[in-house]
Image (cartoon, rainbow over all chains, first blue to last red; front, top):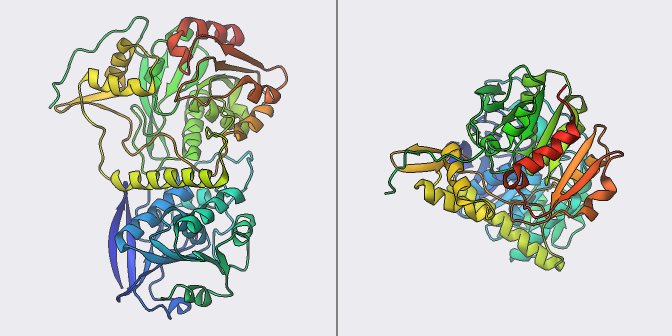
Length: 215
Length: 309
């Protein structure tokens, strides 16, 4: 495994190459509080090209910011830095990474050649309507994952119509018939809404989900 | 290369804060600026997006002279506060809570917010109602996304532009700095966002909101910040918080719409004004009413607040 550090604004992001190779890369996006795996997971072992994995801001070997301020959109910027580096990629996201995979699939629809949304930590996010959410301060720690990442990204707002806007962007700008495939068994409101949209496929497993993007 | 200008202009009525210092907010230094007697009752003052506390240099002294200890702070990335790794609404709320805690502990104090600062205080009072004794909002009640009534596919295209524009911006911000220039050049640039401000005021703002180097003046605002944006938050959600306020409320909207404003109409807001709350339209002024007419706006607020206590 090799690691390259990418720059996203003031944050250094660790992009791991779990298996080198030629052809379109697979980009793995981990769940909330996780980090990139050190080996190619069995679920994606069939992928023909290189397999890469990104540590989000405040996770794994990436920079731990001072003072929090996480949003899913910032992490979409993390994924964008990886996509820019890789050229194009098929993305597999777990939990929080599934939500980010959806966002980047919509935002960079011509570069993301399929996004597979799978179960994992941080899949639900927070409420989809305004609430009196607590304002809190957390003690600093020296090693990732950043407690602010866990707290802020575990409760970020995910209204279903916001999520479906990104699946529509993906369908609008991608030349794939089904640029997004949902394999998650647990489907919070935002994911149920996405799964019901045109251009969103359904599969029983990550292995089956990436099959559609193997070309 | 621009020629550095070293003589800061004066501006009628502008007064340098009596005390300026920074406090720690979870590792991010937040700059506080105070006008008035240090022992007077606190009155909190929150600035808008892309502004900074010193934009209150003409407004705050009027409130201070009425007997208040006026305390404002630069949001992270703005003015003299630290440039942070990350920016978010929640982070701004957290910083604001740290400032309130520093100034007033767990005591409730009156607060005034302009634009983004007004919306921020609405949420702070909703989340931590014990911090606020009364709330004044100067053209800071978001009520709708400023997108015209367009077809769904057109709306999707507009979102594409917003998202890709933001991501493209993020790709360029590593190590980015604000463009240097003379006082006049920076004033002219800011004038595009503040078209109703006088040239003299804009030049004054440069001297308190920018920093001078060998290359010229640069705005202190973090270059990674970008006007506009997108996200899951809905502007009109502020109205739901407004309806639930449990403290005296005084809202001001302005007659003249500007790019930096929300374009909120009284019809949008009136159904959500809490019982006993007040909403007024300031005629003949734009989004920065407190800068255009500081005496008038401060006078109305002082009347609402009553004697400092």
